[in-house]
Image (cartoon, rainbow, N blue to C red; front, side, top):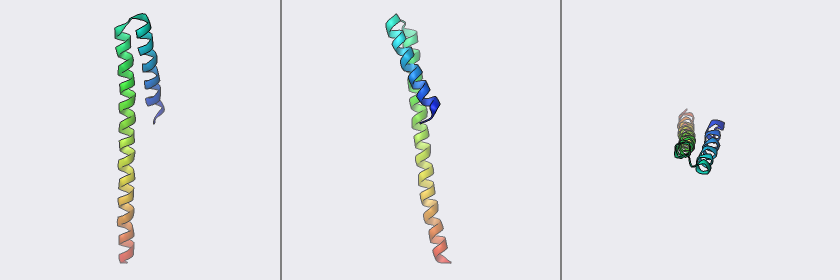
Length: 70
């Protein structure tokens, strides 16, 4: 998880709580949006890592097969 992702989530929680306490629906919604943004970026980063890992696994198997044919 990236630092910015976690920071957005924490900032969002603080905004949401401040909005609830002050009865400021706009601030509360802004906090929820910040949390969502951080969460989405985190999931995209995780998905990208999974794709890289799978690619490296397949590339290694292909290279092993090529090396075995020599």
